[in-house]
Image 1 (cartoon, rainbow, N blue to C red):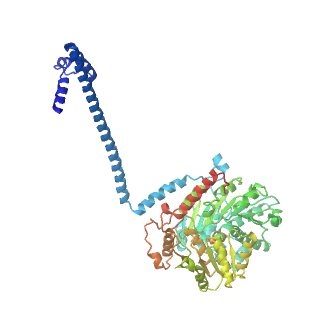
Image 2: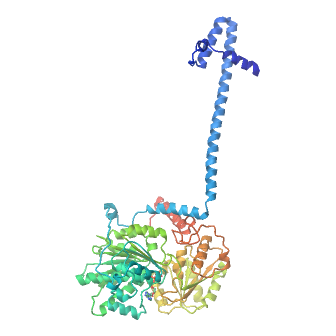
Image 3: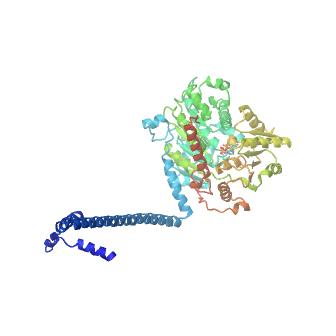
Length: 616
Ligand SMILES: Nc1ncnc2c1ncn2[C@@H]1O[C@H](COP(=O)(O)OP(=O)(O)OP(=O)(O)O)[C@@H](O)[C@H]1O
């Protein structure tokens, strides 16, 4: 069968006269198969009888059918071959990439992820008012002030300034950095303030103060990073007091004028504490009789502004505020920022990271001209530093220790305590030191439960968290500060930045997920050069990335690492500089718990917005 078929095909494909004609010639004109079939059929038809003709026609049709089937089969095979080649190519590319990826270390992968995410962060909208952004207003020079360092310090060389910085482990970054000054008197601070500081045992500046204050006095934008309890409050309040003093001396303020500057805080308690400090320093000036009275307004939610009408009835120099109430007051035109030139944010990483960012832009839109902007915190992940740096004007970065590092004056003890054993063990833990003691929990209900349990056991305890009324919060802080109560049980947020006297022991009942919160919480003890203890309970419920961050933080601070932490396998791609998003040392950006949380929140807010729900 096969041979007769091929024979037939050979017969049919014998060269046509046209081919023979052209044999001598190199040129062979193309004759299509259909044309050849037609010609052959015509030839056969002319030779054969009608029955033979029919037979030949039938044969011809069969032949065509078979040829068509063969051609179709050939096409199918060609298609399959091509598809296989593409598939193989894709597989090859994929396996090549996998091999390359396998060659990369975890650290390299983490670095790549960091770079990608940081690049995305760079595209974040600059921290400036909408008006400035819309009009393309970009200031290029820092504000100037009349303040100068003493001549003997100005005469020193840059190497000599650097020696001072090295002595105090101060890292700086930026152009033309003002010199560090080791004595308050050389900073030309008014005598009554110096005396007041001395009476409070503040005699020599801390590292953040000796570099931060001169930089701020010269009018420079500033990012100040130093560990908890290292005196940042004085570093950002003094420059504003000096600025207000200069303005008031030039031309006294009358009702409706001012303020000169504003200090923004993330919580009411922190704003209240900063306000009390500013009032005390300004009163010291006024009481001396040599300086004018500077008026300060506390602008926070939960208090009636009528209580402060006496301040509003005079010229206003300084405002200490939380963002929400400040925006409310500015919108109601209770005062304006027409002459405001100083904006400072305490716990700044929180202010420009979670939720407050748009509020900060909104507040900036009330300024009428250039301002000096200062950002301070104990924790400032690289992501926030980069973002802040591009939003400030020729900023000076002052960094004492790694951003996010724990205060070395705190002895950190981490204990494995089963969930059900925590309450009982807490009582035992309270015996470690005399009061005052702070207990932290991440959960409001747990805060209430702990307080109730302690009260039942006869421990004088107060509680503070976001769902308490303003009166309850104020009572808790006042009675704990005065020593009337031994123990304060607090949620993390409510107590950030609070400066209580001589806290002996911080107990972290539930370990916060983010290591920055842990750093702030243990930082309530070991302040202004004193030492303290922090005991932290962890167990099965503590997420592994958090435990790793904790492990590396303990190692960095030269603390004892308990066996259950030291045995945790480190495959998370952590870095010695800290995760750019949260500062944690035990993981990379790609598995950062804070970033995951933020993404979850963002998605939830999108969902709420889609559902028509109200936003922040
Ligand atoms: N130069 C100094 N010498 C001694 N004590 C100081 C000095 N400066 C500030 N203090 C005291 O140190 C304590 C902590 O200061 P402050 O609250 O400003 O710390 P902080 O760096 O803001 O801490 P946190 O990051 O926790 O908010 C305060 O009681 C303050 O009076």
